Length: 164
Image (cartoon, rainbow, N blue to C red; front, top):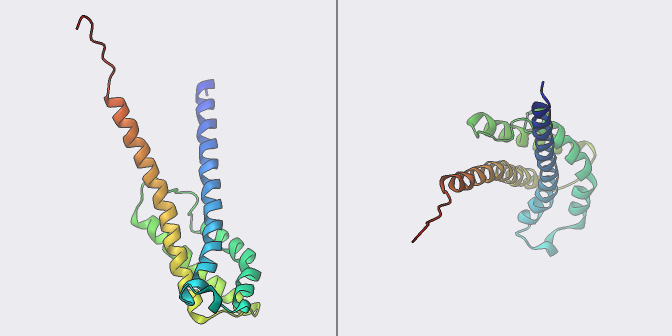
């Protein structure tokens, strides 16, 4: 393998690691936001109506929820495809991973005796699903936009008019 090929592989591996790290951080943020946004939606976005025991229950379980969700997302290969080419299979992986995450949260919160409204779990799954699809699709959208912008730049050529 030539030095140039090694350098290209190193750059590719570094870019891949950066993309996976960004997805991981965005997924962690999505789990946090989904947990508290599900409560807010359940109480019609009136934060004064939310009982503190519900907020404490979500807060107490959030670290376990994040770890379980990341593991489930890894099992469903959400960090390997990166939606280079969005397909029905990748969308199904996201849907199943989010549903399994919600079921795992339901089971975990009941086993640890954390109490939240029953509708919280459905709202959590819906909010997390929307956020995850947006995260994955935004990656594809940014790649498309970058490639189209690059193609426009390549099509133009510099012209110098002499003697005009």
